[in-house]
Image (cartoon, rainbow, N blue to C red):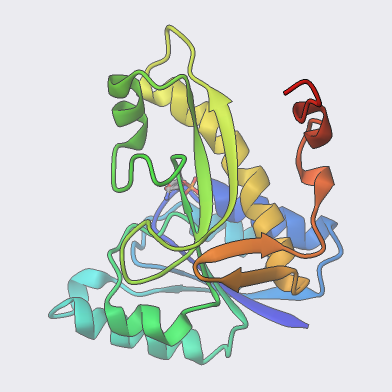
Length: 219
Ligand code: GRF
C-alpha cells in the first residue's frame, strides 16, 4: 500500500479529483494527510468529507521560507509518504524541500510547459494568442515549473475566452492528467532518463485518438 501526502492552498478541485480516484480506481494507495498553508482553504473540507486527516501550517507563523519548509518537512515525514503531491500549493519551495522529495514530488501547472511558467498563465496565453492551451504534470526540481514532464493535456482557446472561462476548460483536463500521472507513478510505470519521462509499458489508451493515424506513408 502506497502512502500519499497532498499539499494544497485553496479550492482543492484537483484534490477532489484525486480523492475520488482513490475511492474509485482501485489504487493500492491511501491519502495519509492533506496539509494546507492556508486555514481557509476550501479543499480542507473536501478532505474531511472523505475522512482524510488534515493539517494546517500557516506560512505567516514562520520567520522565513527555510523555517517554514523545515516545519513542513517534519509534518510530511511523520507520514512516511511514497508520494508527495502539490495540488494547487501556492508556495515557492526551498532547495532543501525539493532535495528531500525529489523523484516523488509531483506538481500540476496550468499551462503547456515550457510555455507560461509562473502565475497568471491563462491571461498570458490569451495575450500571446496561442490557439491551444492546457496543463502539465511534472516532477518537481529546483527550478520552478521546469521539472521532467509526465503528462500534458491540451484544450482549444476560443475567440471569446476570458482568463476565467479558459481556466475552467483547462481545469477539467488538469483533473484527468493529474489522476493519470499519479496512477502511473503508483504503478511504477514512470521511467526517467536525462530529464525525459516515459511511461512503461506505453499507455495508448491515454490518447483519445489513434496515434498511428497521424503517421502517413505518403511522405
Ligand atoms: C490549478 O489550476 C493548479 O494547476 C494550480 O492552482 C490551481 C489549483 O486549483 N497550480 P484547485 O485548488 O486544485 O482547484
